[in-house]
Image (cartoon, rainbow, N blue to C red; front, top):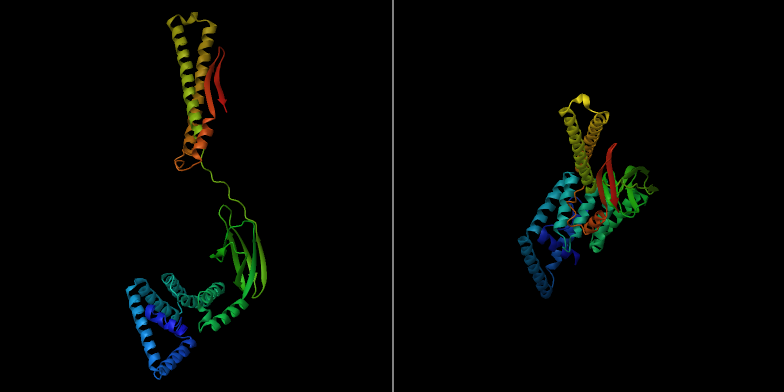
Length: 357
């Protein structure tokens, strides 16, 4: 029955018996098919009619396959992959077979391509990937095929070439990379060929960690990874800081202007009279007002510089429109109110900062 299914696949997508013409199994299959054909000549008429009906169904399926561009592409990729394999271009052949696997998604004989993939992985010394493909071959339909015994023997052989590495990781979800290749996610055990390997654990929000491990065939090793959290991403300053800085700048400028005008008016009053008649108190007032104006203008310059820096690093909330938590944050900011006012006395001036939380 399986042989008939394999021949149907050959008509539909050009796969035929799986994999490579150089495998001895291919010749044995051909001989078996020839013997079956010879035996068919002596069958009773009823059986011959049944075979003719089966042949008609296969031809109809072949016509349907020719009309499907995905199956046509699968045929071409299989042929190209087998040619590349024969030329020992195993990486390129593997790429073709992987594409074929996607093209045949849902096809009942898709598992045959896994045999080809496993062969390529073996040639590339990726024994764990080869094991995965061989096991997939058996699980997805190959357990009852003529290649099942060979595949089971391959699995047993490859398992004897691999060592086991047990992973203990401090986070529940992570990626396992071995020699810069992704092996799997949240794996607790991995199989590696004998030799030295770099095992790296990557997890979102954590600093990647890696260790070197030397493993021998059929040996067991254990690695423990304690991942460190990444520093929290800086999301920007609150706009309240910018507006506070802007308010301080404006108030300082206003205070400086007020004291400057006061000093100018006092000085003009003295100049309009005989300066020699100016009292000591009037001269001290002019100096005090001038000094206060200088202080306020200095504060304004410093506040303006700080405000510009705040503006560069402020999170203006451009992405908060779709954030359901944004209204709550706005209410929290509304709860904080600052008030800055100049304070002017007879002997000096300053700024008064008040607030409500």
